[in-house]
Length: 453
Image (cartoon, rainbow, N blue to C red; front, side):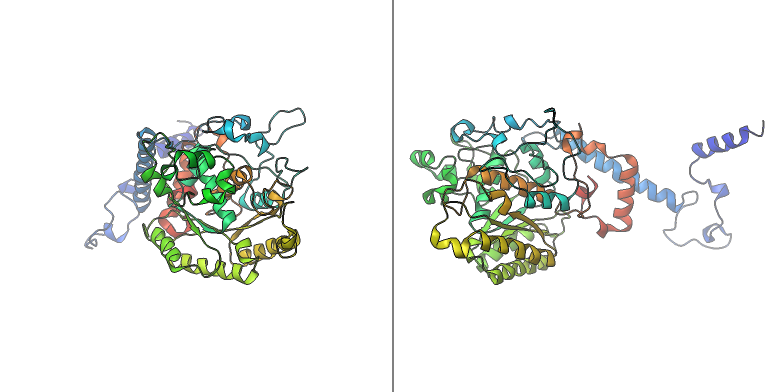
């Protein structure tokens, strides 16, 4: 055999026998004659490296089986794979119940970035990580009264209901704690998940025919007599909203959503108990439970009350020993119909200073912050303090985009669902083994499978 062929022969032998054979294994104490091997020592011919990779293969096989099982499951609308969709925002609400009656067109709420020739972008204009996304949504504006909101610097996507469900499935629950503005966002969240523009935020099973007619669309948000029917937990919808002619079930219902209304700090003890009950359901779970928190007009923009409320819920969250990332939402701007008597204490000057200072306080407490002031500036308000269904839907989508990255580092990349035909199977074997190695050697560095995906 020529000298040139010897390296090739050695390479082929190494590929055929990737692990050391017993005859060439190093003489550790267990191989020395006359020395008894301790109980449970590694058998002859199997090295520690071999044993580790066997574990990796077993774990990878189990994860693959779980993925296959979740794909083939029946009995639920919720999909475990994100569909390959394009940005047809003109058609986003077409399949929602009552979309024609409510008169809300998705292009009036959100416009994807466009090139000069009218062709849509695919990648470059979208925010790349959590920090830039929050800054873009907080710092954008409107180029005219009540025109669609434009984010600053980079764009955000408008996800389909199926994609929102994929985001929610990363969590063990989502808690909304706040006053009227946050209650409206929670109502809009239910509208998106139930795909019902007309009555998706209400307890339809409790309403008479005349009440359903009076509380449709915008009236879910602006009529006081309709607010008593507002949904406060996803469990009540799952329990009661089925079978009747006016049912509107969730598209996905694996992640509980709960609203805890508050108007100050400290909150009543029964509100604390509701949060503690959710956090105690599965204390050993790796999945986070994001808390969306906001206080503004109900406290007359009191800075001490807002910071006391932040500390109150941070203390409760930390005591649970769960992964509970918090997101602070700033107040909306004052509309042009704001009563003159409220301009001094609740006008845009006071609201802007409150927005800036509370965002600073949130960051000092390692909370993320999302501003709603610029989103609502130059938007149509029916009373100068509150906004209707369209604004609430945009706010709900922004919250959904924010919590998608709450459990991740600020520099982490935003996954572009639409650029993948099959997101979950796009994990390479090498990356999977790297993450499995990290999970085994440093289990606290990864909070869950969501970090791998």
